[in-house]
Amino acid sequence: MTLDVNNQLTLLLDILDEQQVDCCATVSEYQQIKRLVKSMLANNSITDEQLLNLLPDIYNYGRQGESAQSQPDHITWNRNNLDHWISAIQQTTTLE
Image (cartoon, rainbow, N blue to C red; front, side, top):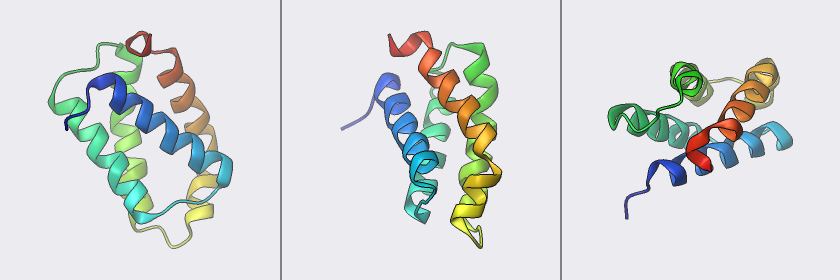
């Protein structure tokens, strides 16, 4: 089953929000973030310019999280980014 862009954004939002709230994550979650972003970019499925500009940063967050020595520290260091990304995804008209 293939996820459409709305499903992908909802899943990405859920993962980022959960990591921010719980301040913990798994390597597989970071890999999922990377897969979601890569798929959305490859399919040119995002039309919101702000979110389109943020996706590479979200991908890098996932990439760095995979090899982070401390998952809580990685999340804490990215707390402001997470706030910004979550807000941008929530405001994306694609989710409506």
